[in-house]
Image (cartoon, rainbow, N blue to C red; front, side, top):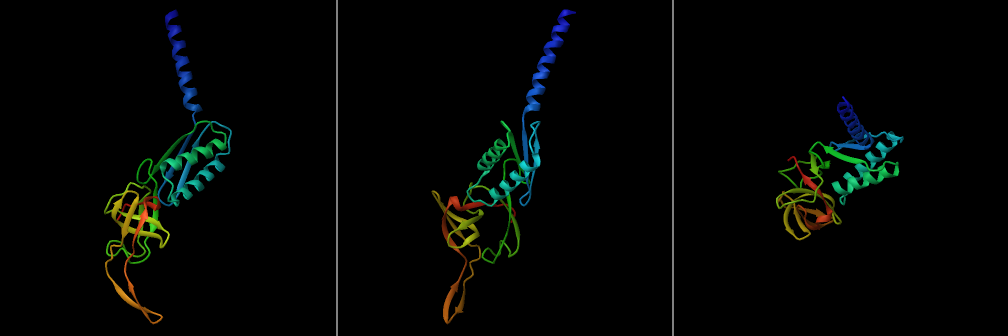
Length: 200
């Protein structure tokens, strides 16, 4: 009988430790669908979860539009926000419409430089990554052209050659001068790549 009581006490102690460890952990679940962000905070800490969730949402949306951000910088930023609210060691889980630890972003095609592959006004989703290959269609920031959607034609180290799918050339008179109108081709640094187009 004494052995059963001791065994029961040991089991209760282990269960208590397990429950205390599990329930004392803070969990932040972030879901990104490419356009919207939702956040759920699971904590026993006495914090303003509504303000925390709003700040995480705002930060995530900014990260989606920042070419220098990635899944690591996103998690680090969210972790920093959580620490500022008093959470000790939160576990941050990122899920999305394209899988765990991925950042989808919705973009709109503007113009005809990627015809016939992409149409003006078409809505695309990109996977926010710098893991690109020749032949991929990517979204990039260009100092000369602004935000562009182009195909990767060549990669040399950190430099990426981007080109339009539309190879048509036209000519137009502007203020009495004849100009050649053709799709953009440019070299850019991989740091300027926002992500790879997924659905075309």
